Amino acid sequence: MADESAWSKSSHSNQNDGGTCVSVAILADRVGIRDSKQHNGPAFVAPTAAWSSFIREVKSGRWAA
Image 1: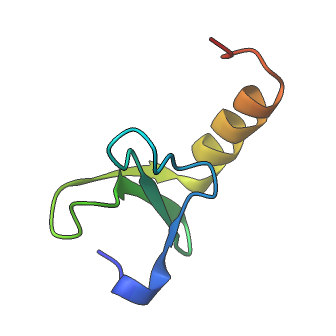
Image 2: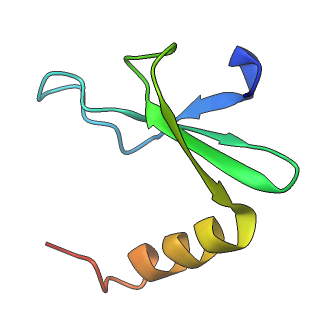
């Protein structure tokens, strides 16, 4: 899917609860999302526009727990 260097670990990943981490790879027309502890595991792939919309919603606080 993407070279390992394309993946970035979220700055919001929590090291205190067992390492719950998300990695994201921004590609030309899509975004890969995966568990950063499973480099060879599955990745969710979304169109760039859908990922951008999701990020806007999260930042708006709409999905706050």
